[in-house]
Image: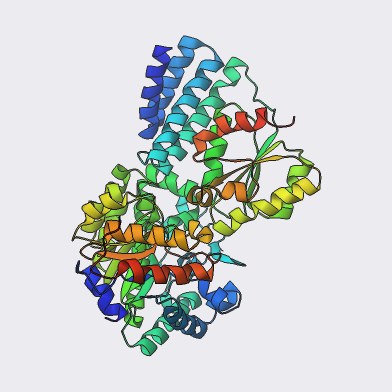
Length: 344
Length: 215
């Protein structure tokens, strides 16, 4: 099986030849290319070449065209702060008070240099790979993006106490999110990862999520012309698995704080799980740790397909040693080849 | 005491529903009955501790913790003058976000500390190591609380601690934030004196760190 076939089997809840491995390598490409994070993401050709090289080196089953979380914030006119050996951060929020929201308009993709670079990298990868490997594009959910647009505290005040302005902001963000997702699909992305950390019960209570984030996800995903994964970026998912399935996503990025067996039971044959290795902890792992962690996820969630092994946050940290990633690839071959062997 | 425990449960319910009005009513009723700051402080601290534990267990969300902290801070702020209570200024404490621009964690911890009746200096967000060393030394801070969101920022605590020690400052550093939750030993690796698993933990940690500290 090639990576596309392997992944499609897992998503269809069938057992492929082995558990697919999605190492979500984004800024790690800068380390591999021995250049700064800023330089790396300014060059779509370099990103494409490095993605192709990293797939081969780490036996990865996906390409990941996520540049940095603040990309969409940047398209809205926000400042992005680049740093050595870390992800680019969003600068000061540009919505200073809720009154500004009624004047806010969705940015045009054709007018954002950053977004266009992602599309160019996507096209280059697709052209070179010819569709043998899933290309995973990324959007920030309309519901979670305001954490950058206006800051967490002001956004929570908006969410709980300013329903009209909240709805207006969601309308703007939804329009942009749908356009951005579909532009990536048109450029060659196989699926879109809809990052929605705010919808996790770690961040907001389920009742509020049902009134807000869940409805927004449903509306947005309905308009995306391709397969979608919902990723809660380390936040727990178990209490909202049914709602995430109902949102129309085919894949769920779950947390290392989730009970794997319970999430597998809740998801069974309805949504494919993506996760749940702890990327921060990965920095410290030796081969014994790798074998233990990888085999555990596969044993608990791999049976019958429906599992893609990945980290639980959506990005491999720059500080993770190369030998850990190579070790994970080894461990997936060893423990993730179907039929799965029964571990004591 | 039993009544205060019952009031604490009612207060918790109001806070988790983000019902400012009900929370204020309960707080006011406790004030009318007890007429002492200690009872109000106990109401806030025990309730916030339980809410923090709920977050650890996954039954309470971060936004509920944040809003609970803000409401408690507002109430304490309102009632302190009525009882002629002044904020505790010892140990001298400050809080900052190292490198990152995300201030929610700092805001939550600040609310809890202020709700506990302490004075706290806010050094702001996006602080560099040098900037923070300078502010800490200038203000002769006993306990510095550091919030981080990104992993590389968390790693910079090590440099911060080393620079303070090199300058002869034995400031205690308490860290918190996502990287420290995801790697439970990270706080030790970066040389911090303690870490908070949740914001409500901070009052207990302050006592431990300060009681064991060199005053």
